[in-house]
Image 1 (tube, rainbow, N blue to C red):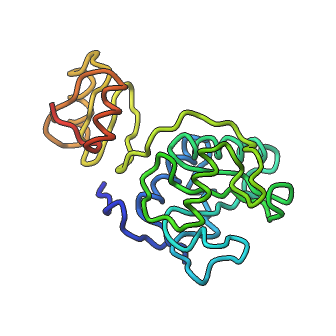
Image 2 (cartoon, rainbow, N blue to C red):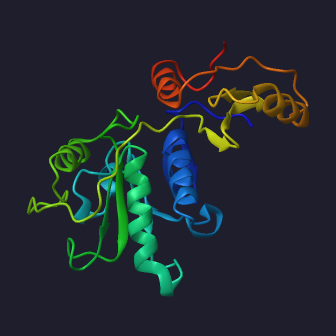
Image 3 (spheres, one colour):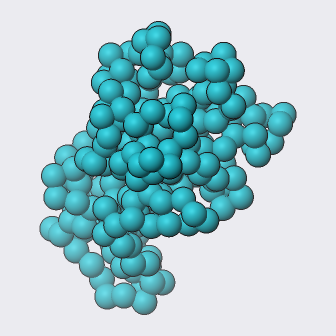
Length: 223
């Protein structure tokens, strides 16, 4: 699979986000156990300028901002799924909150800025303010109230996304990067062969060490 440049603007159904932001949302939905193909609907994207919703202020004027539909999630588990989704968005570097009448006087939706330890640099002043609120443990609203969701450890979202597969990471172009160090040949060779590509170099080491390399140099790592 070929990924467009991370900062490239991609428009789907009239909604514009960066390629990185679309991938980030899809990865977060998947981690939350929500099928992004069935349920990921962005109701307000980025780069809206004067077309942004009045209640949003300047938040959506530039990059890194999205509002996500929630009423389409299964009613019986909707509240739980919204909470899990917020946590997974946060885990990947976003400042995310569930908004409704009790939290901002709004229609129910999830609001997210990819900023605290994320990768979207082109944030509006309103989005930057919400990032600072998140970092300070606040709710991102004008009342500067306390945060009301769990706060997981955050890790920068890797783009192109890394897919965990049996103790390894499958990355773009079928390359396998081994981080477990166990049975590397048995794991890597069949997977590469199934992709129809030649055996690739792999990085053998600890998961924290691998994360540090990805953060510094990107997801394709040669030995």
